[in-house]
Amino acid sequence: MDYLLKTEPTVYSFANLEKDKTTIWDGVTNPAAVKHLREMKPGERLVIYHTGDEKSAVGTASVVSVDGSDPKTPLVKIKAGKAIAKPRTLAEVKAHKLFADSPLVRQGRLSVVPLTAAQFGWLAGE
Image (cartoon, rainbow, N blue to C red):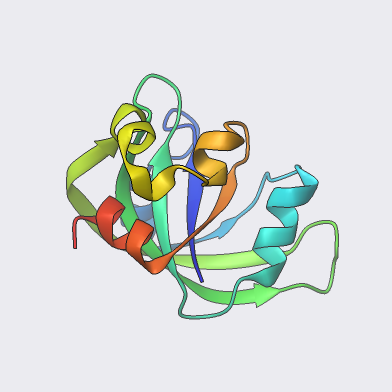
């Protein structure tokens, strides 16, 4: 499974992740989003999505490790991938048939969204 992680760029941007190389993805409180974090496996691919004024997929990352010992706050360590050459906007996502049934479109406030391989590829420009 691949995932999309939403972040407010003024709080923690993809540029911050590139500089830090790795980080623990935290601050997630929505039960459905926490469930997705808990289900992550090392090596799975991630798309980093900037919320706020940008509303676009801007970079890739991957899961390094998952510590689910605290069920309320799984500690997911991620590492930076690469910037997406042509960031995909929310308007483009909503207009694409690949995302018709996606929680990315249907549950706008969900901060961790599962993606199909095809969705990941399209967002990442692969």
